[in-house]
Length: 448
Image 1 (tube, helix red, strand yellow):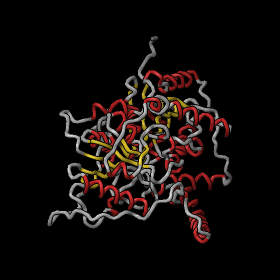
Image 2 (tube, rainbow, N blue to C red):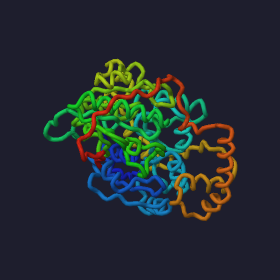
Image 3 (cartoon, helix red, strand yellow):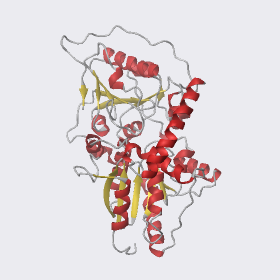
Image 4 (cartoon, rainbow, N blue to C red):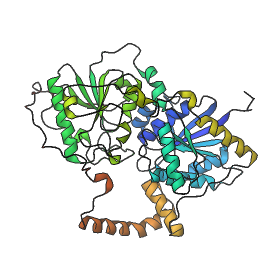
């Protein structure tokens, strides 16, 4: 391979918990680059505890991640002029960061890398729309790349998609405890928005109680990204740690911490659609994808059709976990690593930048409103962390209008999409089973 000269320097920009984990893990795979990590401040920026957990088993483990405002981030990039910036943030923040860095000018601006963590099927236009100006857009399966390319072309956006193996897959084996642990744990991988309905979440708790009562030899763990009140990528209206009330079996608990560590003890993993199912497959842990709520794009579980992992609450309560169909794996996250091209695509962009030929991609957003709209989008992305005069003015004008629109929608009975129940399958009333009483004095345990 020809000499490429000095090592490339890339700065990763992260914000919420899931994007910290993905960004740090992905950049840890870029062993030919000098990488650094900073956290941009917003209302959902990960807490120090969440950052420490997210950095476990990455090249950044144990490091203190600098927290920067948008203005300080732009100043840092202008001063240090890295070859690339890996924007691992929520879409609204990514749109603003990418736009601000492009404004530095062709001679100064870095190569802009971005992507979507975890499962990104079905393809969503908003994911492309907010990141359309990035030079390289990382996805994690041949199926995702094909779906997003088709969607981009449909909307007149030039594809910039590149393939990368999910970083959690290749590292899972090394994340397990040094000594093999007893596999007596069933891990339920919770999500902030799936299922969104409170009743459906109570159903899941009822099934997990039954599992714990019937299988006293199993430690049933509800693995959450954050406890109630912790900032997360998506707002969680009904946190499981607040819903788990009343008499609770002593082998059922809520826990945070590293998913890899939990999988090192797991006899099985259950979820509705979490990326943790992919991590479990890679670790050889059998899985149940609950299909009692249906299989629907809004549940982010259509990607598992044909996997052999979709199963019902009855399979869960009987602890009948299963392994995936081999034919499903290659197109869905388990392609051979040599097929990854995101590093190559990035190097090509670096070379074009060196030559001054790296184009600036057009924005997908064509909305009206001028500077006020720009300020509004910035305020929406960063919340109280945005202290700009433009953002403040836009918020003062736009917030009452937003509230009025929500009140009108509520009066018409229109629910936000993320709160709308999925009518794919109607469920019977929640089953009740006489709980096993906890020992006298025992309390609900929340592991951190």
